[in-house]
Length: 294
Ligand code: SAM
Ligand code: GLN
Image (cartoon, rainbow, N blue to C red):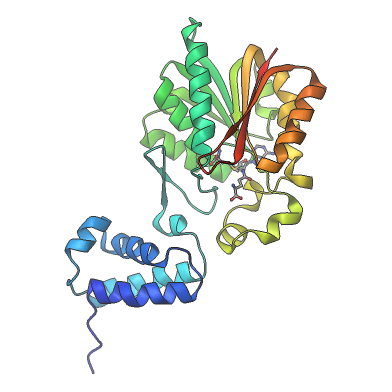
């Protein structure tokens, strides 16, 4: 008996119901994105081809993508991309998928960097700690042009993805990727930075198990686990930054809303910072602290 022929519209309907049953958020959107990916179309074109029948090969390809998503693999690892600051970033299981709330960190870093650049003859010197797929460094390099960014990560595999993204977006000459533990690679030079930016791992070790399966079971633990109260890296960055910042240079950090008080306290205790400010993300939660080296 010949197997049933499926058209786009029917297939989307059945797949949406299936993903919903598997507790995938936004099941219809997921079904569409995966089908568009399988057929190598954009979603608008998919809509224009609602009655198009699928070949056996397309159907079996789509089924295996849907199966992965139903097992709660993140959509972005299946399609291999995440948009950040309107740029397509290649992502995969070696890197954290850049989050929309991190755009506020970038926005703030950009605004401080632009002010600093106006008062400086030499190109800006920026450090990013824990660059992952490189999203933050790449946006800064594209927007600022007269800049040299040193971006570190402990994961060689993540740095390979970041280098690829930097090439794709034409900023390889403005970013030096360096492997090592946090500040370690930056000790190689007598460099002073105008800006240090980081979205470090900040999930409390005790809360790792509560994350959604997409995050908990698929994203690199090393990118998320911030140890006791999620403060391990934040503390090392706050305490270490004054040794690397130029006088008047800025530290801009992403963290969880409940970590703000502790972070400000660490900054007070170090006596190295002034102009401490916290900023909200687009969902209205405190997400970023910026402070200036006094
Ligand atoms: N900057 C990217 C972003 O915002 O999407 C990734 C941020 S992710 C939350 C944290 C990154 O820090 C991961 O890429 C992880 O590999 C890296 N990392 C973890 N421990 C590190 C360490 N000891 N030194 C440097 N980087 C580290
Ligand atoms: N916002 C991330 C999450 O919980 C955590 C990111 C981080 O640790 N830097 O999905």
